[in-house]
Length: 210
Image (cartoon, rainbow, N blue to C red; front, side, top):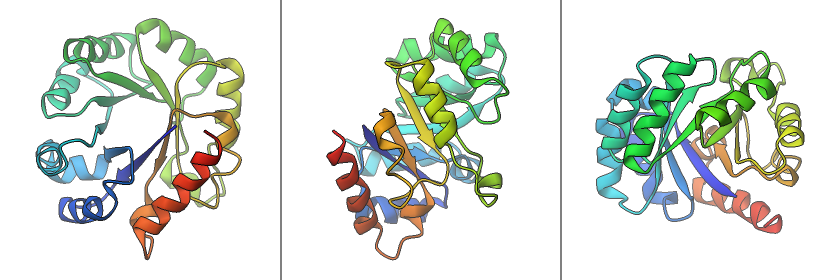
C-alpha cells in the first residue's frame, strides 16, 4: 500500500507541505484545484524540487484523452487520472499515451452508476487501476468510499484499486483490510496542525496491515 497526499491547494502551499512531509509519503497528487490554478507548471515545479517523489496528475480527463494525458506525462507525472464516465475512445487514448511514456492510468469511478460493470470494461481497455472515490461535495452528508471499495474488492480480489474521499487516520481502520494499492489523503494532512505527525499516524496504521 502507498500513501498519496492530495495537494488541492495553491502551489506555494503544496511546496511548503511537501518540504515537511515529502520524505514520509509515497506519492504526491497534483489535485484538480492545483492544476486549474497553475496548470502543469505545478508538476514541473514539484518535480524539480522533489525529484524522487512520484506524481499523479488528477486531471480527471473527460475528452481528448491522448492529448491531455500526453501533456501530463511529459510534465513528469507517472500516473494520470481519467474519469470512468469518459467514452471508451477517450479511455483508450489515455492508455496509449501512458504506454508511450511508461506511465499508468487511474480511472476515477466518481459517480459511476455501476462501478463494478464499468471497471470490467476499464480493465479490458488497458486501465492500470481504478479509484473508488467519494466526491468532496457529498462527504458532508456522511458518505464515504468504504461500501464501494468493499464491493469492488469482492468483485476484483487481485486488481489494483485506489481509494479517496474523506480518508484520514480516524477513518482508515476499515479501509486497510480491503488492501487498496493507493490510499489518497488530502485534507486530513493538509489541514492538520502537524502534517508530518498526521502522515506518520496514517503510515503506522498502514504498516500494521502490510
